Image (cartoon, rainbow, N blue to C red):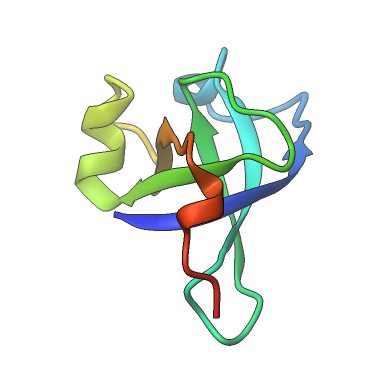
Length: 88
């Protein structure tokens, strides 16, 4: 898992059937020196500006209950005490 910050949303009217009903968010990995952004499936109800826990690969697919989908990243938690996060 990594810590990220939600910086935007993705709207896709046409997508793979496995992604129907999935909320897609743009997340920035705050641990990288470069500003790496990626799309993650949100199943916990995050908002822009939230600090979140993100998982990747098969753990992401299992975390959202879609083991055979094309999901590579999923938001699995919202960080409540963001003032304690060490940001480079």
